[in-house]
Image (cartoon, rainbow, N blue to C red; front, side, top):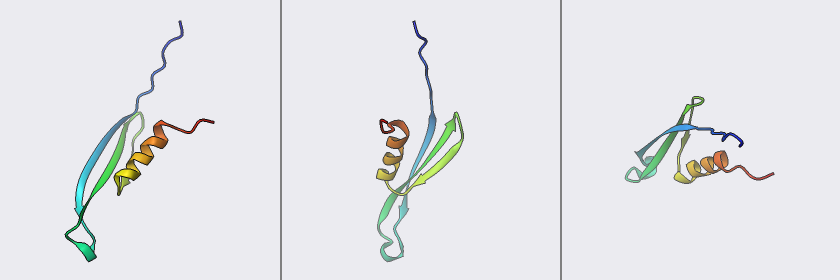
Length: 65
């Protein structure tokens, strides 16, 4: 029987709301910070949820080839 190989990546996701720009200060939007804590350290910020999801899709579902 072939041993099962396991590869874990651990992330901390921080989400917060910020006020809009000077032209529209009443508008708020979400910001996201994804910090990888294991097996390596690193962080990446995103200004939209779609940007965050696109990054995660690229990391965990690479194109077949």
